[in-house]
Image (cartoon, rainbow, N blue to C red; front, side, top):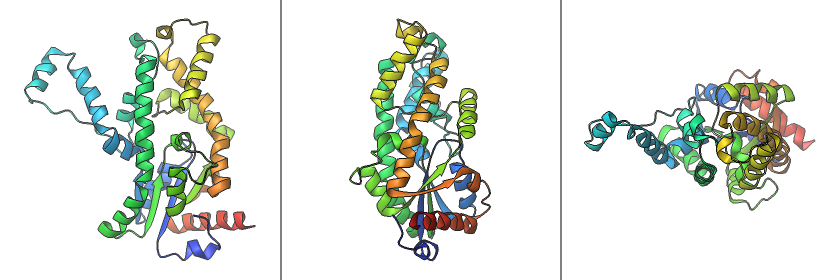
Amino acid sequence: MLFSSVDEFVKAPRRAVTVFGMAGVGKTRLSNMLRADHWFHYSADYRIGTRYMGEFIVDNFKREAMKVPFLAQLLRTDSIYISSNITFDNLDPLSTYLGTPGDPNRGGLPLEEYQRRQEQHRVAEIAALCDLPYFIERAKALYGYDDFIADTGGSLIEVIDPADPEDPVVRTLAAHTALLYIRGTDKDATELVKRFKKSPKPMYYRPPFLLEKWAEYKLMHGILDDCDVDPAGFGAWGFEALLHDRLPRYQALADNFGYAVEASDLAMVRDGDEFVDLVAAAIEKRMR
């Protein structure tokens, strides 16, 4: 959704914006703030973890519980209930399910199982992003929201072609929302890697990139057997490699179909009106 004038966005009776960029640049902070200012907040990761992967996540919980005889007996007799308490701000159930490949004795998953779960996430992410038009209308029809913010995960860029207007996800997002890239800095990227090591987030790799980095990591550390890979070590190293690989593709999506703002400017936004002003400035900049 590219605008022919700034007023076309500013004076629109209803607005819908999809924010994208690397984790940690302020997408969720912005969305939470706008929600308090009567914008409907759609979290793609929440939709993935509930509607599309919720059953996988809960089944994994149950699989672990069944290893404990006491809990296994209670589950068999429906005496206890296990569920996922995923929220907009806590995606740990999804992160735990996706896991990290490597030594099972150190909490890793066999590479083949990790790839299977990655494919589940790919399918789920595409479905969650293509749900946006339904939720835009639902937000208005059910709750009376005119303004809509879609908070996407960093892996949005992994499931689309940022140069293809006929890509089904790109076509859907561009037709119904303004695509807004929140651009971070090298300092943001460094801080994000530190945060990831302390609290891993859901990660999705394009299959060729995953295999490339898996082989590279093993070669760097002289590892022959997949089971000898330290999952935490690969997770942090792979995340940093993935982060830098994504940056030019985020920019390409903004260049082709949307707008860009700096994360430092977004951090100064305090309410919906200031956010509209920030987007308006990005529209004006592109028009020049």
